[in-house]
Amino acid sequence: MQRRILIALATACLCLMTYGSAWAAGAIPVWVALSATGGVHAEAAQALRDEVDQALPGRVDWRVAHWSSFTSTVPEPQWVVAIGTGAQRGMQDLFARDATPPPLLSILVPRLAFERIADPARLRAGSLSAVFLDQPPWRQLELIRLALPAARTVGMLVGAESKGHQPALEKAARERGFELVAAPAEPADLFAALQAVLADADVLLALPDPGVFNSQTAANILTAAYRQQVPLVGFSPAYAKAGALLALYSTPAQVGTRGGELLRQALAGKALPAPQWPREFAVAVNRDVARSLGFALDEVQLGQLLRQKERP
Image (cartoon, rainbow, N blue to C red; front, side):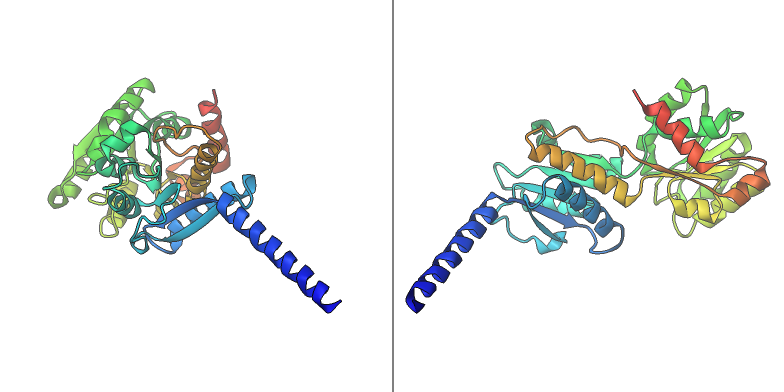
């Protein structure tokens, strides 16, 4: 009797081990490489995983770590997600000698940074894509049109990073009846350029260029714009809190969720789409600044109107 029980237990354990191995073999190995282990990068990674796991529970074998922790391509993952510019560069370098590297999806990266470091061969092959961090030009200009219908000239300070945005912004401005007033802004003459732009602009559009808007310059730019009664549209909620009239941005969770949607579709057999702007976004309004400048703005309403404009 005891021997039969032991045999039955052994058989059950073997079945469980076989089942577990089969499940593990069927799980899809996905690496998620972080540019930083906490903060916005971790938030985006969690949103990405939640989106995939909700649709494909138990189907993905996740490995999430700082990009520098991935030192070997063996065993090779089926997919790689890089969160942030540093992780994208690190993952491209890691698989640079691989004849058939796994597809790479880069998220939470500025468009210009992505394009600067993207592997052209992988882009052509369709094995590299992205969900950008920054906002598309048409969305930025459309928000200004909705919030400030009397505005006719949009000012912009152009630095080394943001000059690549200028042609698309000029096109989007023309299509909406705006004149774009742009000035090159080198660190040495930043505030001279700012004064020149503020003299002609109805609204100042801030772009995520660290050479222009950074911890040393942002407060002075916001103060100068406010004193000239020129509303500023920022690119993060921190700017709205600090004194910008408006801010247009996508949260890390929104970018991560969109990345999860693309990864989920790719795991289901769809081709990796071209690099794209974030689909979801948020609008923030500084009500004190709005009241002081004579505007009555509602961030929820503006967001809804903006989404309606983008619906096909």
